[in-house]
Amino acid sequence: MSVTWAQYRRARRRSRQAWIVLAAAALAVLLALVWFFADGQFRLGGRFSDGPTEAPVLAAWMTPVAAVRAVPAARAADLLESLPVRARDPAANYDRAAFGQAWLDVDRNGCDTRNDILRRDLADARFTDGSRCRIGSGSFREPYTGRQTAFRRGAESSKAIQIDHVVALGDAWQTGAQQLTALQRTHLANDPLNLVAADGPANQDKSSSDAAGWLPPNKAFRCHYVARQVSVKAAYALWVTASEKEAIRRVLGSCPDQPTIRSG
Image 1 (spheres, rainbow, N blue to C red):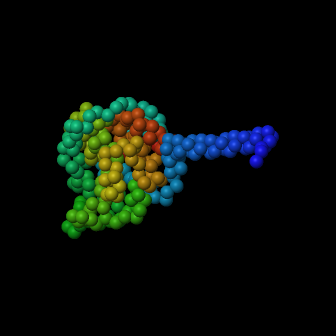
Image 2: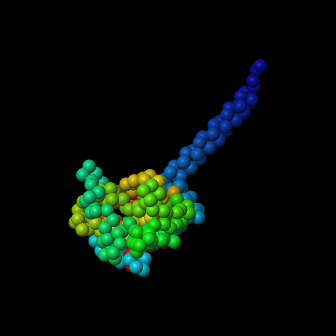
Image 3: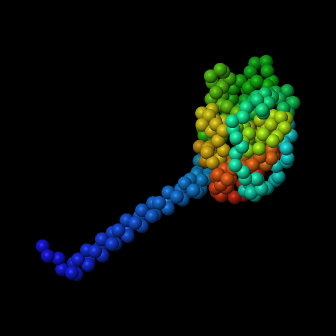
């Protein structure tokens, strides 16, 4: 079958148009993926969950722990810009014992830190029989997952609710804590500002990650979470890595007026 010159030109024009459409679609998909992984996942996830948006710091019966410096009343985004940016120190010599014995009574209120935080965070905390410190049961809307969660003291059931260091001690060790005194590290490990009662599996998933490696599944909590990390790092003269700073900056982009988190 013969094809006229006009038909050939029309066919070529339609072919070029089809390739242009396909190229434009591919570019749009590529740009959407770049936006999502660079910024969109944080903006889209900013506050579309119905879980808790914040966690308490001090209850009326708690005493602030002395930090290295006071956290200023400011926007968390502004405080973030004031933090030094450096690469991590080596982790090979990290030892939990460098932060003192776990769950000391640093604020000298007669109860260890773990029970203080459980009492602070559980909405209906109940003491064990004969104790005014040991929390035996309670429930609350857990901030990392947003789920209603029950706590009951026991060898296995206690693992369901753990006390998370918002700035993980392993992360702190690599971002300045090696230069702190032993007492300052003990305070960091027991400061209510740096502690949140959290879902055990979520806490295990986080491990020692900073904001570049892990954020709470409950997206409504993320602004408070990163603001609390910034506040803890400022309070204990710690630095952030470049990737960590960028991750926190992206989260705070969805809540630019998010304030710092302070103990008083």
